[in-house]
Image (tube, rainbow, N blue to C red):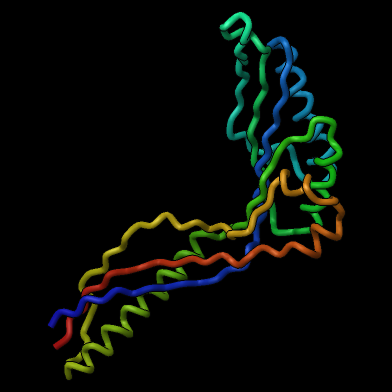
Length: 215
């Protein structure tokens, strides 16, 4: 007798990692000025904020870097004209969950002359370990179902002959996140960040399809 069941596993995990995504931007009339001002701003962040809070410069990972030529439409001339150049560098900083450290970074960023925009996510560092635990739960759930079905049919459950796994791109991030636009709308202070913001637990789910043999 073949028994086919669907096993599900779910786990709720408290975030243990902060992911700070930063976007440094500025505009200038010439390419050289846009580049030099942009690099100067990033270097200020690295030297005056990152390093002074215990990070190394290598921990800031650049995801993209571009300088674009800007155009704007001139209504009188009815054509696009030069509007200078824009500097854009996107970078990510990851560190262990620490709201006090995060609050120091946010407050320091808010005091920069040309502050980068940012959004913050909360995740887990050990994704593979968490996923394996959830898969084990899904398999156990499938086994319990197959065992119950076999017993109801007066059969003995022998072994699992096949397991199918449907790859699902799990999001190992808390639904809670906030950004620089949110912080600008609030009176920023250290206590507010530390005491009034607790990210929601991360829900991880996996599904297995198992074929069991009973006789």
